[in-house]
Image (cartoon, rainbow, N blue to C red; front, top):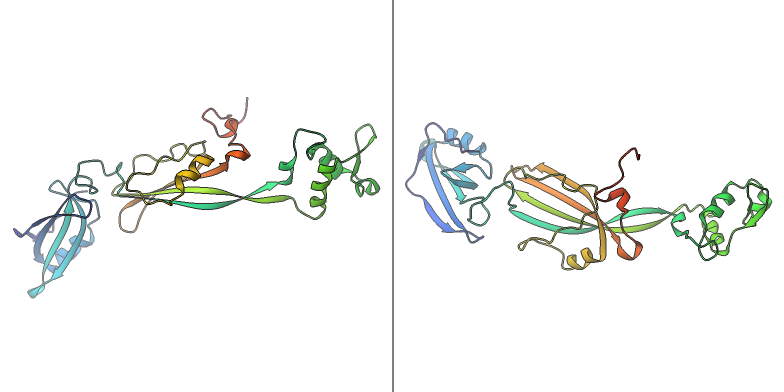
Length: 268
């Protein structure tokens, strides 16, 4: 958005050019005029506004004698990041990565496996839970549809004992990898791959990130679970993306449910 110059503001010849912290060229443009007018002009300014092909970064208003004000606008070239041209909606000013933990409650049935003897058996456990004869259930036994009596295998008994103690699930924690980027304007790409299997991209060269981020990313299978875009109080825009990881040794996210060609609802 172009800077709206106050009616009685006069641009001053005393402008400066300097090298900013990002290695780009910085400019200071000054206006003098009635303090109330410059104040209204200042409060309407936002980081990213345009003036004479430059991008506004900050401003400072000083009240001088006779209720006159001096407004200094600090600007940069291009998109405001490196002094080079670009699109403010596609080039982030800042990129920060973080790692968090997410609680996942997994049913005890997850311990069940394909072997009827070597693993806890889900069929046996469900039949035992439905057994109404206490004399059988107390001994980890159940009757099938024909009336025949069966006993839980040793592994199923171990899980059944947990169920008797009131335990229905086990707590596990997954890593949550999060990327936050700051833009001068609304970012032009939202909801990308949200809800799909997706490996987090490599951080930008200047991104702030945990030291072990690359190792964590390589050890897990990832599902993208967040892609939020919001305007901040300073007029900048933030985009926050998050990926939930599953340990490779525990498997990976189900391609039928989260893959590129995931099942439609309803399944036909």
